Image 1 (tube, rainbow, N blue to C red):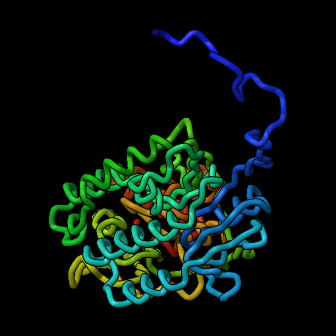
Image 2: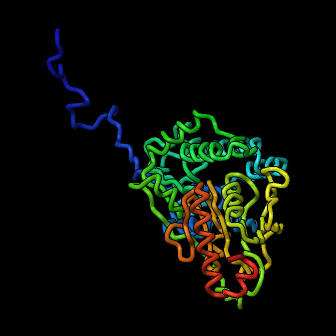
Image 3: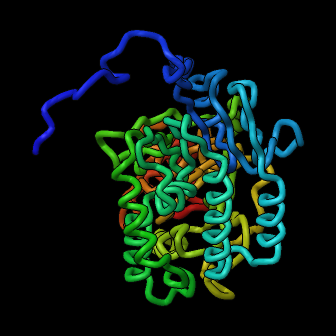
Length: 382
């Protein structure tokens, strides 16, 4: 027989007090949503973003309290948030492991990925239900996604590089263009990591970056920040005087920094060149040997003495030396991969194009010859 309503008095139909009646439970007001910042090494652009968007209700999760401990690498503006949580033990482990690994090697890249995952796991354990909005460093994103910590939350990403799919496709093109390079094909992340990062980005509402090329990967979701340029006084050099073309490559001799393209362009230019190189020579001994090319190790003493800073990189995510040079009024020739589109004093060339780089250097020579016709004929050729 089907149910046809109350058979008699019950707690659902009685308004009279009795021993069985329970007072209403005061659940209070629900907790408001909170924003947590899960960050890594600080960029000046992102420190400014935190200052302008942070709130006293926000939390900052980071490896070390850089402002308190005097560690510039992690010196995020702690006053912009109400609470700070650091992970010093995890940060120390990463630092010790990193020191034991040579730079620019596949083993180092694998170790860095493993440490990114470990730090992301430690930060994920600190998240609480009221963390309804996350601002996440890019190297934390995929690992948080794999742990299901992005679901139901509004996620903004502070970009540190190209997405892995685009980055590895870029390196594949560079390796195909320079098959004799010992470095351009030495490491690739697992395909599963690339695919999972792409899925994680599908859940992101905004990406933040100062890098023009990275922003172009997310045309509808990118917030393009201005690059932070040093507030140094513009240097004005005296008359150029005699001497070869003076250039600085602010990078190691490694394939992804465009050294094969630069070497080819300089050989085609066929003028005396003095080239400063910062870092190790990883493309093999004698890589820069060539007629009319003099190599100097380390950065030049004064940027004002240079004719230009050159960066024909396939991959460049933090072009700090280029920003400093442009702020000082030194000409900069950079590939689009450097992300400096529209910056004053920067001549942008197609990434991987020897012809475009050679044309930019030829135009630079033309300007020098116009300013000092006699000296340039004696030293730079006709």
